[in-house]
Image (cartoon, rainbow, N blue to C red; front, side, top):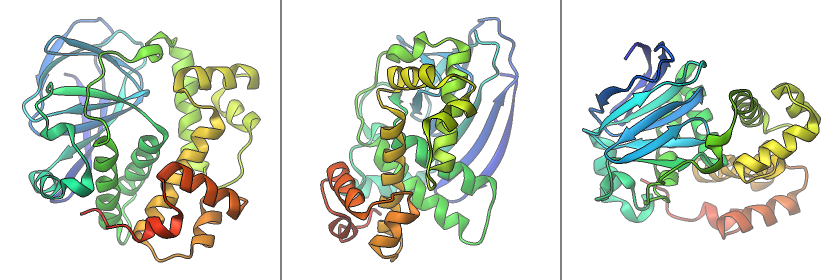
Length: 285
């Protein structure tokens, strides 16, 4: 496949790669295989993917999981060249995950299911992807620890899904300009969740009208923009509670919430525990 691949980060647990495809939009299938287990996020564009007898349309609305040795074919029908973030999982990470299954949750990578699967790109997964990519692209003191903590959270989040999906539902019906608008909107929300956002600002950034944007976003993500924003904020709060000793009140406002009471109620509803009790739970490996 014609592509440029840049290594952004490498540690004993993971290799983070920036993948940019340069293939022609001719629909011809290309056969490839994965050397190691992989979690892939499509930042832009889309492509056809076939593994065994399963066919998928891979785009920014889904996350692709592949086991080591997975053989697959890809084909390109979109004029937009796809850009992806690839998380190549190292053996040490998988050994740790198997030994701590009670904390990491069930994982597709240890199941007897098909060699590839797709998951819906939930707000939690979108946030973790964006945070991982930012830490890998701009290394700083402690960035390796940051990447590995986020990676564990990512593995745990994907572990909540053990059954592969057969199709991408309504996401496949998006026209290219609609998918571009959604990609811009989700990226803008994930990049600015700590401040006050309004619908008109997000719509303007996505180059669509407010009315059209609100309807499009909810139709193809199953969430309103507000619910998506709230889920991203809560995921960030959960990580801060797990990996820092910041006061709960500071975490509340650092995550973009204006009301402490609303934060407590939203967090408890999302995670089944209050922030204080969540902080006391066992730390994932």
